[in-house]
Image 1 (cartoon, rainbow, N blue to C red):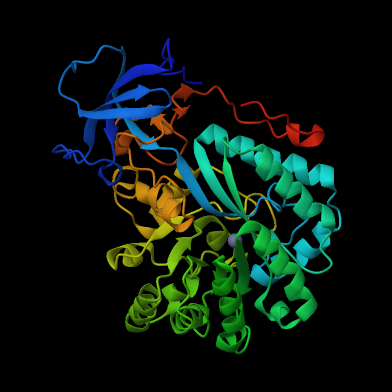
Image 2 (image 1 turned 180 degrees about the vertical axis):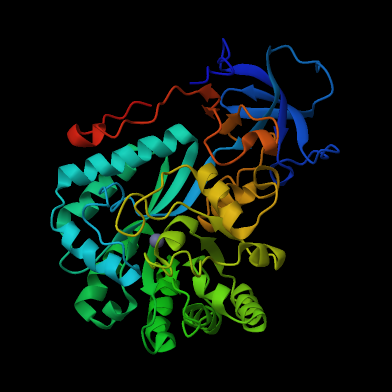
Length: 437
Ligand SMILES: [Zn+2]
């Protein structure tokens, strides 16, 4: 057990957080020769009042906390999760299967849910995310016409209760074939209207352009954003992303379209991959790669693993200037029996899978500013004068000390306050969790 590496300021309404190392994507200062922006941050009344280059004691009268070169990032954003399913404790209830067997097993598992158990799991997830330093999340919530009513009531209540701690966006999710049923459309469009966004699962369904066109037209007319699960598999015949790009372009869709997974891109030829990405970028699409569930499900073969591993080509997307993020996706459910809601741990895993060099320094936009843009948040996460003092300070002073394979010790700062939130214990799932922020 390590001891806490820094103590809170005496007066959180005004203090100087001195000698921090900020990734250049989050800071306008000139990076030093080590590639980090070394800075002193003046915090006042919950906001960043000023960002000074770190070059000795600056001329401001404020309590000075010397962070000793610690890494500082803005509070993190997780743009693709499934809080409704998270923490159902997967191993005993789910086969070690693929995507489609996980979907089938989840249908059975949902029959055991109650409003109370759902609330316990969602609050557990949010409590974890908050303690890790997450400020905003998007959760997909499964919807079919026979979904129990309590699911959306519980999710909506919790979203409202957690405002100001974790900004939670909800996105109704269903297979695209369901949109052919007018009764289904009335129900899901009502949910989309109340949440400002709509999601659909695209895998190997037929006539995707024909099926997507009325959904885009409806969402465009109503001012909703769209969020797709698309091409979550290694079969190169999957072509959902190309269909989304075509329909977004043809309908001149005005909102933000976030495309999750896009695993099949990694199975395309380089030429087809680039053509698909470029047409998606011309249509304004955003991307999110989900390393945990992709590693868990794709090409799963207990007798021969590992064989092929799947993940959207994050480095290629970034080199083509795509807005690309990493997110937690499924946590301890049938789609991934592992995981947690710590975006820095997701970046650590994603960096190994996708060969991202110096992830904390050079790829932190994947868990801060990029998902903030995809979720249309008010603040993108740049550490600058006037921004909220919503920050995460790590004990690590460079990429080597961050290591990424285990959670570096951290202090989470929200509205300038150094919060004391702790990770919940799994046994809390038995009896319910109180919000203890
Ligand atoms: Zn997902």
